[in-house]
Image 1 (cartoon, protein in one colour):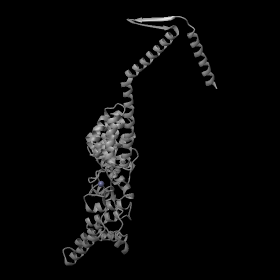
Image 2: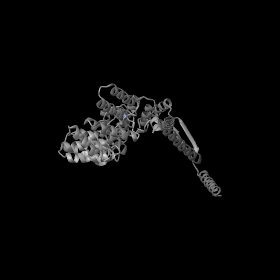
Image 3: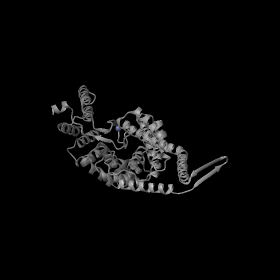
Length: 426
Ligand SMILES: [Zn+2]
């Protein structure tokens, strides 16, 4: 309704103007060179209006032509951005699906269309890594490190690559650069702790790791690596306080106490540990100051009294009794261990020595020895230090497995059950 009224009003105005113009009297004469144009005033006014409108249309056309390159560039940019974003999506899908070829191709396309943005560089690097093209990934990560807001991503990627190829020196440098680019991240802290372990920087590893059951092992290693005796003692004490039954920790602390002249405290630590975790190395430490076999047998009795029923106590008593020439006592201890179901090789080897001492180089002695040695060959393995990660056996405890390189994984394997045959026999 409003439109109809508007149309009627406009039509009325046009008719009124036309009627007014038509009513203007007179002639307009224009001479341009030899040409003379003559028209009535209303026609001349109408022609003038048409001329002005034509000039306006022409100006508009010229402006459009002038702006054409800019409009074209905007259109092209928008087109490239849309195509680039589609390529980014395709990279993400290919990465998620583990499709190496398409991921690299689309990453290259995205980088070409969208330029060196953190997003395209990161995708190119990840696509390179997925395809095993570490050189491509490294090039993209290095380009990322030059981007002010995203340099952490570049250092992070390069650090992961250095860790993968076990280049710890390079990894340490990159970790420091990453820390500068973006301080205080939990991930980086964990990486730096891992690097500290790999480079045997035990004190730093302790600073960087939180609660961890392997910390006593790190403390022992830190004590061994520390040249200052007071600091070494402090590390060893921490190891012992955190794990008073962990034999390397007990020995690390007791050794330094002994070196500092606190023999009594050293022996007390070992005796306390024997109650819960008897171990041949503890006995060796406790008896080390004694050279007389009888005195050693007496000291062994005092130690074994703290945990008399344990096989380690019986084996210690058998060994020291045998060394003191007390073969009857040694045999008694072996029999008691055997009655408890212990069938370890070392028992049979001690028995062979007993037979040799008791019977000497006689036919009966040789037969008894051979019997004991045959038993040893078929016996259960002795407890030993073993890596819980790769299961490699080692002759002595170490903070790091020499086979797989993992830290804090060497444990005393003393809980081997007797073999199926022995269980049946028992
Ligand atoms: Zn290992």
